[in-house]
Length: 470
Image 1: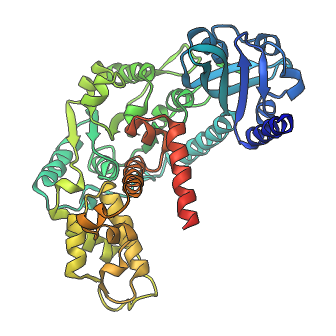
Image 2: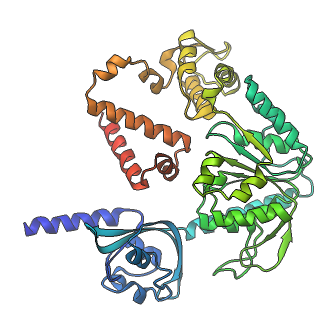
Image 3: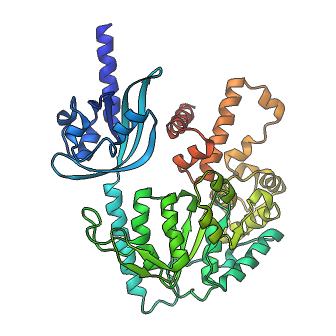
């Protein structure tokens, strides 16, 4: 029994040390009881320097208010994705994003565990990209005839749907103004085409068009990327312009505005109101002339109820609002877009390039009956798959991805399956749809499904194991 317990402990430590994330656990007094090698590397420490010691003794720059581990011990409430900046005993600045949860035995608190990501490297890469982008725009500042990021116009929004035609007409109308715009639509409905098209149709078309996805980078980096930094605003900070200054005279497209921290939305509102910005750590204001176009993949009304969108910011943006319907609500566009992609996407050597590709009647029916959770983007990806798979000029059901073939089962056949299998298949479909809607972002998919990220990650891993085993 003793030997078995020893093996279990060794296995647990091997597993935790093999995880590519920093893990730090403390008891109810704040004394370290587990600290893996990745955590030691992140913090610039040795495991033995931390084990068995109180967290404030090892990291004296932290306090009971700034330490996420001590906060959780005090409140018994989990903290997700919170930034923490501190110095280790050697004076080295450490920056992490922490998820910290209490360890409970029934209702009794026995400790806390923290999973930390070191985003110092992410910040460094982000700063390098910002520097390259700044140089690019300065290089093109004198002689550029159009924004280097613009590749699409409103003509690229292919539609025969009456509602979408009205959307394009409104977009052309809004292009003649400099008012801010908010675009709402599910993932894959074409929000960036509309944003680029508005810029291209405006008087700002020769000025920069810059895109930033608010959900693609850590919240703590977003402010410095948008507003820039002043030298000395934090350790290692240098004077750097932000995207708002880079886009001066042009357009800044902020995708997934619903992922922007509410505190940062206040600063964005100020830009919209008076056209001034203040860099992170700076005292001087800078005037910018930039048109802001925002996009959301969740309903603004829903985000307002969830208090993830400031009401005053929404009212400022909603003067010019555009709503893009999902593909399932514009069925007349499905075959139009499918045939458009067949004629415009690159062909392969698997089928005769001299003959135009055509959809057989059965394929058309399947495309029309599918719900398209990934919208136009999913349809485009499907046609790309078809062009690779098809060996003849007429596309048949066998050329479609497997998910279309699986839907041929009748209701009776489904009910003939064991309940456990039906539940597993249903859960798999729901998870796949959530990942499609969120472009594969596990955190956002977990929020969409209203389950913890760890739970979703576990379910995805189990799905992959089952698939590899078949």
